[in-house]
Image 1 (spheres, protein in one colour):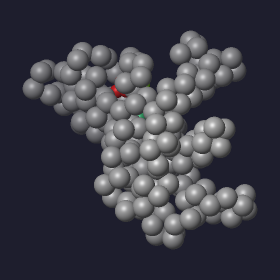
Image 2 (tube, protein in one colour):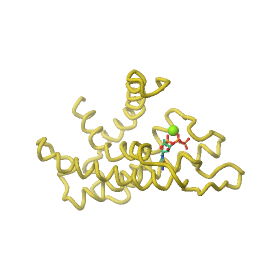
Image 3 (cartoon, protein in one colour):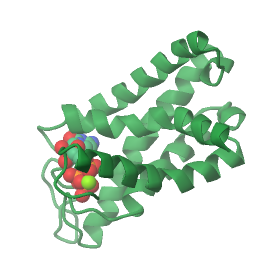
Length: 180
Ligand code: CTP
Ligand code: MG
């Protein structure tokens, strides 16, 4: 059980970290170029920037690459059970899928009238994850070698919990004003 939990978190790092990189390095020109959709609301909003997307995807790939190399030192073989090019395709599609899912999430939120930055619990935590899985499944022939049904189910359960937990810790450390 603990093994499954830790394995799942490890495998999801290339999907979890892109948003953090986007927060740190984002800003500037929004992906929707400030334009509205046919409903008169912003297509995506100012929270989705070109710089955030690019550095986010690169950040996730960087983490996956570091993990691949770190696994030898830790004596484990998850990403490194694949060849480097195969692992690279897998982590790249997880990272790219994660931020593409993040865009889809914002697109849907704008359509239902939720403003930029306003949280939508569960939805915010699961759209990026589902799209990351879809991309990795589509682009990597080795997806199912690492992402078994057990890992996927565990991921869907633990991701919202991890999110709540990290926000609570950030709140306790004084990095956030509210614990959610
Ligand atoms: N960010 C970015 N570019 C992206 C994704 C995120 O620049 N493609 C940065 C933005 O500064 C954004 C922050 O990371 O405000 C937090 O990301 P997120 O919570 O996904 O965006 P929100 O501002 O909450 O907007 P939304 O309501 O559309 O999710
Ligand atoms: Mg948000």
